[in-house]
Length: 299
Image 1: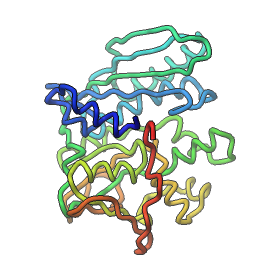
Image 2: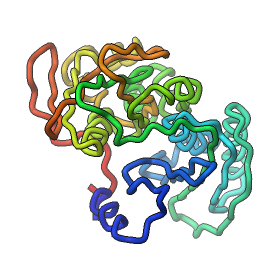
Image 3: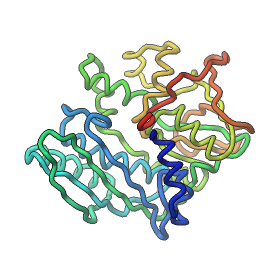
């Protein structure tokens, strides 16, 4: 099964009312927002990535889901596989830095043993409170599609981590993402729909549109790209497509009614309309969507 097929099978199981039909990255279990995310060695991080950075990233990717619901972190439950004492200590150092930076205390969790040579699988569950909780499925016809920050930096940073020469800022974007909690708090009461860009802007925008029963148009030339990214990848259409499909950015992707200006720094990158599917433009020219819109587990 790929990720979409597995989610379809899960929807046939008994679901909690707060599961939102498994169309979102969180569940609502009053008074909390609940999210769970895992990092797998060789999939989400490299075996050569510093353990402290992996610890930071595990917290950050979960916190990003809370940010997308405008939530305040309440705490973390950690599942951790023990294997190497030095790596474990490094992981805890980075995890502790992230939990302190974003005021998310540890609640508890579980430890297990890991066979020698097995890839690490790291998992955390986070609770959030006071959430406006705009759904992924809430976009309406005519809404504008916006994104915070810049795109593509983490994908380029992965290439740097694999040995390409490139700016340190890109490597940091891949290894130590910054969840947009403050922006999420401001956007939560106003956005009609919101999620974070974890798998790639195109695939996440498509999911947002599909959940709402709408189509979405994305303008590649409107994508916000950082100066380090432009220096590394250039300013070609291929570079813009790479930024739109790479994932791991953890920026907020959100819908606002037409004519409304977001209360945070963001770029307007598209629009929702009646219909279905994704339409792509670059400089006013229609493009066929790429074969790969972003990351799909099992795809």
